[in-house]
Image (tube, rainbow, N blue to C red; front, top):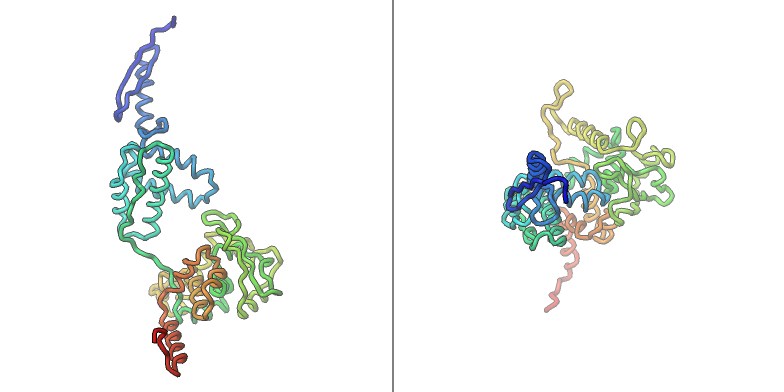
Length: 367
């Protein structure tokens, strides 16, 4: 027989009955209060009655934190959840969430960038699909989510005027060789940060791309996909410039002023400095060394140079499958999306081919 006569206290919260016992009424009430507080915080046993907030913490810790994702990728999940999902449904029980709750979250982001909206949908789909697979809920409310109207942000090729100014400035600017490499190879900025002189094969006239600086961290890792590992032939002008700057085999091709490999911040500063001087070279208004009237397009980014490289391949008649290899795209559709962008000069050149080929008269295949 027990030495103590325990006191039991009960209370209901969110439809669930909670129990606690203690040697005294105060002890029982204290334990019960802590259980209710835990339930309100979502610290409950795995099940449909747990809150969305509690499930998100469990899901991320179990299925994401140990997956080897970059800090930037992990941060994306937290940013989208805390900013857009938690305020709307974080307090709801997992089993009470319906598709209308999730669709309202997406609809509230109508007009935002497609990248932003699709990332929220990705989070919702992964979160609730796993809950369904784990038998925590009877059906997946995220299964049929529809995207609202979004803004499609597209990278572009540089204009002829921009190209002329960029090539002229690249002859003398500190970032000139880096910019020229982006334009003449289509490499991603992160890939150039990992480039060493051992990767420049002057005998074969190729640049061997096999690594990249990991986005969101300073680590140098293999390329994001197997397709990213590629050999890019060098254009004559680029080869001459690289040959003149040639360094020790395993030193970075594009070092910081301290001689270290570039990181995300230093690459950003490198581009910002080049773009500022480009702005001035193209006629920006300057007062006391400050630009007061900019003329450079605000959407001019390093990726515009990569996009231009792909467009140049198209204009040169390079087959789509070859362009895919040179760009390091895993999916040929990604290359095709650039190849199918409307380009007036290419359209006119190809119509001219029809005129040339039909001088003797073109016959219909159907007669």
